[in-house]
Image 1 (cartoon, helix red, strand yellow):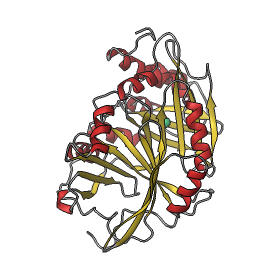
Image 2: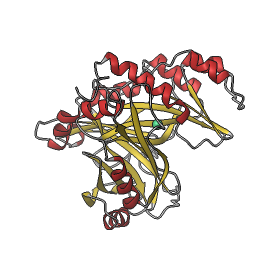
Image 3: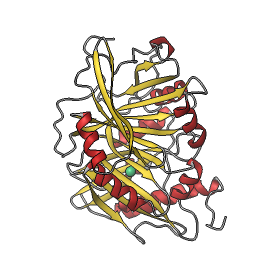
Length: 387
Ligand code: FE2
């Protein structure tokens, strides 16, 4: 370990919410082969493999790769080393590769967990410590959606590389790639079954003292064929933002139906990663091999007619397929990747908020969702509800 480098928490973040939440920590995926998916994130997403746990570090049932950017955006990729590691093999057999847990850094794990349980959260793991010669890390978890967890973590008493069990990576590889400038997690989105959105929005609002920020009802989000409902819940200081989508029955099944059918349940649909230069980020991600959705050129004809103080060159946005939603005095630039795994379930969003934009790109929903639908049709999944 290089002296002084630590991928734990950021104690200087001072929470401004009742749950002591400092901000997003890391997101952990359960996958079939962690090494391969970690290499994809290193090569394509431009993240560095900074820590590892597995047999070489004394962990025999699983291996995990922690990837990070210089701004401490962290993704963990984990796979089972034994069929008997049921928490991973059971999840992975059912859902395919996907997000098992997202972690928030808190000031006091016991206190946050206690408040969440009193407020109605379903406990998954009571507060516990893991320790080694460098100190200890405290964790706990509550349930969200069918098979996903929100984890509370505190690293204040740990001075090691990341957390007990982890050491420097076994491989010393310099990946040839373009740097992507990804900074932090902006929001994490869940897809749920019909009639579950209100339940989960209410659950998270009660458990974590969050609030509903935006509600898209019937008629707000639809294409020619399909429709969906969406609620955005967030911590009251807005450091954590979690949109929740539910299908709404229409002529054909929506992308949310496709997700829940292919994932065999509710779970995380996408993670939005923020950048301060989306044109450079998307250009370099594409050069690294990341696939994005494509929107028709006519999208930019309509955008060109609007006068809202766009500071980017519209031809460059068009060249890289980046979408723009105008919102009051600000605007939001965004683009979705194609699903990154074999099943059409999880994808990333790249996002840049300009001039104080706080929304989620409502003006782009039609273009984005039609683009998803075109791929859904190719997969044979744009079917009626009778199928
Ligand atoms: Fe999003």
